[in-house]
Length: 179
Image (cartoon, rainbow, N blue to C red; front, top):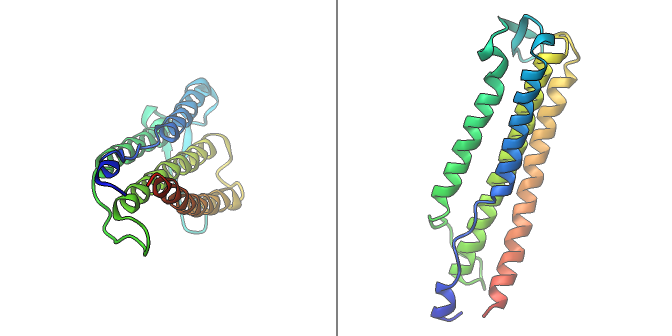
């Protein structure tokens, strides 16, 4: 790769679409809470123990109803700000044999940012589900309604890792072909 071509490799994007979709989900959960305010029980489950049993309740208020969406929004903003900041940093590993260092840096950072964005989306799904569960399902509902979404979250994050890894390979091939 020539020096001129190296200078034309732009910084990777932060994959705003995934963050916007995540924010939309958070807004949808918050809107659901607003519209269903009168049907939400006066005593809400706030914490489940390791066995999936509710061990703490709180009276319905703005904060108890909207804590989940607000925490999720804060996490999404934190992850988005992290993506904006780290995209300028170099990776802390060397390029694999036969891959140009700058191509590796660009593809690796793009894949990292992609994984971060997909993880943010998965996190918004999980927190949204947990919030809706506390509003609409009885506290003694099946433990599987707590465990299965958490396992699904871990599975989605694992798939996001595989997708990011495949993305890295495609970007390395595409950027290397520009030689």
